[in-house]
Image (cartoon, rainbow, N blue to C red; front, side, top):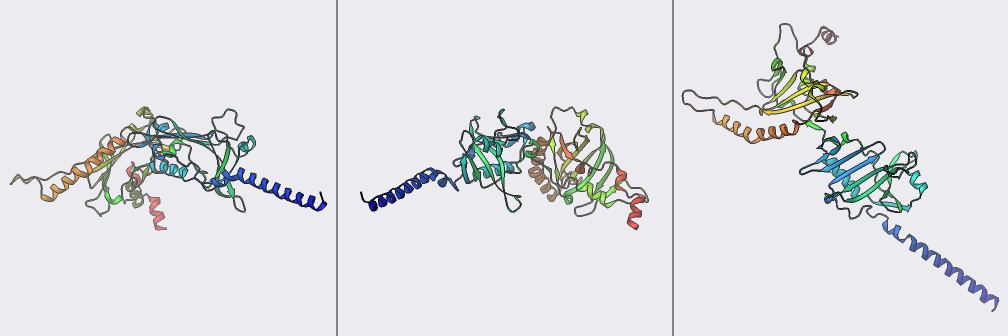
Amino acid sequence: MKFKSVVILSIVMAVAGAALFAFLQFRNEDQPDRELGAYFLEGLPANKINSIEIKSKDGAVSLKKSDSEWVVTDRYNYPAQFSKISGLVRKLKDLKVGRRFEASEGSLERLSLYSPDDPQAPDKAEGTRIELKDEKGNLLSGIVLGKVRKSGPDRNISDGHYVIRDGAPDIYLVDKHFEYLDKAPSEWLEKELVKVEQKDIKEIVCLDNKKVLFSLRKQKEGEDFRLSPMRKGEKVKEQAVKRLSTAISSLRLEDVADPGLPLKDTGIDETPDLEFRLFNGMVYRLLPGKSVADEDGFYLRIVVSCQKKPVTENKATGDKGSEEEGAEAEKLEEDTLPRSEQLRKRFSPWTFKISKWQYESFITEKDELFETPEDKKKEGA
């Protein structure tokens, strides 16, 4: 064979070899390329999810769908925030793949992708495990969240999360992060308790064993509160009245106590109560207790009832009430009574834990509603 032919053959073989190598590389990387931008949990049957468990070394929470609502099983089946749960499911369902690579012991440890249930996990290498199950307890999906991917000049921008699926050989980088995913059961509770505007309150009464200590009352809607009883020379501290009258404008819980906790341990039967009576007949009775041991909070119970509007009677004719009063009574029957009964059932089993600043809004000492000499000096200055 001539030298020229040998050179040509060598070139042809080299080109063929390069082409073969490129083809093999393409074939090996074909699957990851096709997965780039695909949904990480494609086909997840979100409508079949009946329970969610979140576990990490820092805490764990179990959420379950009951007959009518989602509850936090770690908190005695107290109602959970549905919007927060649906937001988590939607976020999981919308995750898209940004990168995929083979998992190894080194990468699992470096990215904290060991399951928190794994007794063989190296120190500080555990991630957060999320389990989604159906009504029968069958696992729909199980994933472990590892470290958050950081970017930017100072590596302080969270723009993705390293995750791994149960039994999968690969680690994925997805396009969303779960850096602030709550693992404490109390953070998943439905926090809102009472939301009543000041303008809707007709009267606030402070009671100690049914004895009225003081009351704040409006003669009609739109007026200011008047404190009773008042002594000559006393001046109401407007800021204190405002604080008390807005105490239930956005009343939220921090946690719930064990329903089996004895009443004597809460101190609720030792302190005065506050009744917030609304123009529509609804009555919210708040029973503040003592501080929670080892926590920065206080106990509280809520009792809801409905105060029926008295109907006047014309003694001459025997007619009971005017047409307007009849309409108000009918509206009360249709709206307020069912709502008050619904809230009564919701609150009656529970003792709540509320924050210190909300507790301090429940003024039960009448003297706190009056200006002191020090207040007058400050006002003059």
